[in-house]
Each structure stands twice: as C-alpha cells, then as structure tokens.
Image (tube, rainbow, N blue to C red):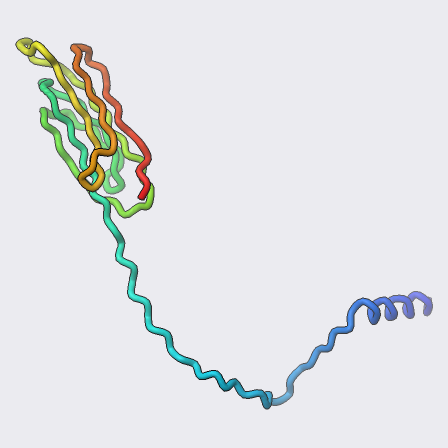
Length: 145
C-alpha cells in the first residue's frame, strides 16, 4: 500500500512543479503606467435605407402583396399607380412585391403592368407584363448593404 502512495507522490512531483504563492500583504510592485481615461465613443449613427415599391400600368384594379418590418405582410386591392415607401435599418432584408391585375378596361388595346422595387432611389428589381392574362408579377430579392 505504501508503494502506491510513494508512486503517486513521485508522479505528482515529476509531472508538475507549480509554485503557488498566496499573498498575505500588498505587493511591493508598483504600477508606474498612468491610467489615462479613454474618450467616450460617440454612438454609431444608424443608417436608414429607403425602400420604395411602385406599381404602374393601365389595369382597372390590382391586388398588391408585400411585406415590411413595421407592418408584416400587407395585401391591398387598389387602382394604379400604387406607390409606397418605408425605411429599414437592417444590414440585409428580403424584399418582395407581388402584383395581380384584377381586370383591364375593354377599350385598352395594349395592356401594361409594371412592378418595381427601388432601394435608396436606385432600381433594385423589376418585372413587367404586356398581355391580357391576369397572371401575378413577382419581384423579390435579398438586399444587402
């Protein structure tokens, strides 16, 4: 039994030679480096990005579906032109705009419908249609700063 105790103590001494000092009084080492207060950093301004959704054409009425961070999913039935805008602060944001024409006037020879997404005044995505079918135009994409 004593052999095992001696072996464990010998292994402990051979493996680690760590010196632990527990101070009982303040150290005589003095830090001579002065502590200089740092200037408080001014808050980083949050940059806002303006998103504009535009729907134009010659349809009588359209169903517009979109989403934004403030209101979530929005669906409206409206006449044209339809314009709306909102601001975001996110670094990335998924933008979507779906437009479905409900009807065209009977006297229109050339139907036309356009859905556009602008980011800070620049065209980001666009879709157009020039036929009599009442198909949905979908414009979407992930915008990144």
